[in-house]
Length: 117
Image 1 (cartoon, one colour):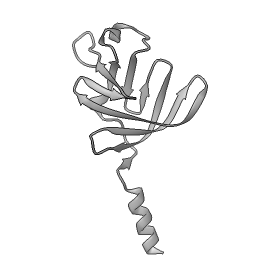
Image 2 (cartoon, one colour):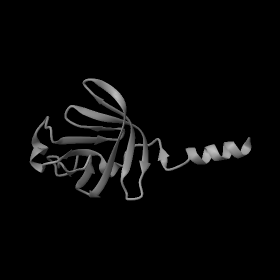
Image 3 (cartoon, helix red, strand yellow):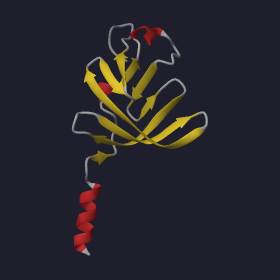
Image 4 (cartoon, one colour):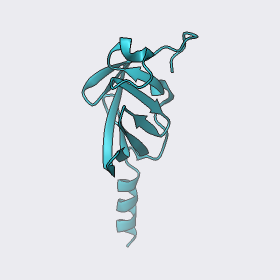
């Protein structure tokens, strides 16, 4: 019995953990920097500690897994106006001002005072 319990604990303790998305990813992003000034742009994305929000859909994050290439796989639920389903999204910070999500590169939007977010 102990052998099975230890094996199960090893499986549970992998790289997945309940945690916030990295602070370096938080803020407002846009796939076209010109869209940063638009209030409700289809090109925009907002990363918060426990969610990734797009124009008409998003992801609520329950668990993150850090991948070997530096990316973060966020698991939880995908939601839109039709409801919610289990879903994942992978985010990878390419530089301080570039973030890859869903195969697209997003640019950090600067606030009026010059800081990100």
